[in-house]
Image 1 (cartoon, rainbow, N blue to C red):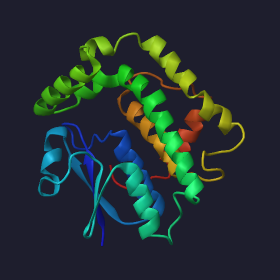
Image 2 (tube, one colour):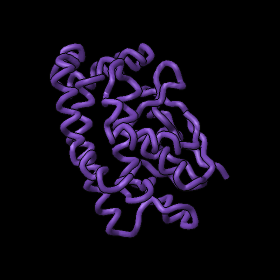
Image 3 (cartoon, rainbow, N blue to C red):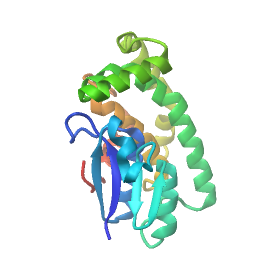
Image 4 (cartoon, one colour):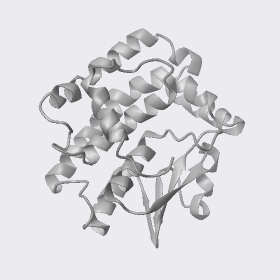
Length: 223
């Protein structure tokens, strides 16, 4: 039976951009399991599965309902142990939690400053209203003001990727010789940024860009 993943979208339903949804989709693709996605705008999330969902990604697998991309990855390894592992044991799960904390606190806030208004602009009108109200309240500033000073923010983002760039000089993936869920955590953040950037995020010779492209090429799912 194919699993169903509810996936954040813009006014154009093919525009899928959530970093956490990309983490979940990469995990599903990695395991080689059949799944479909349901394009879900911000204002329709509360209607998922009879009102049971509060956020996306939201995975339906038979009677199972799993939210949070990390929980989805852990679930997939337990439910489908014969597929390629997303984690190499409990220690790898603990390490991936650190990578998640790093991406969420060091990368994602800079990404918001680079593309938050661009995200707003691809949403349908009801979602634009919701997005502006909630994000401006959280950021305590207008979206237009948040997304200023691109050069400085892009420089900060490049520097924030230094730990990954340094590691890639010694091995091709965070997971070692092949990607694991820790890679998909950081990939999700970069995919989010790449989906909206109307500028070069990384230099063509940056090892991080080669790493990103290598992972992007492995995805076998839909949008």
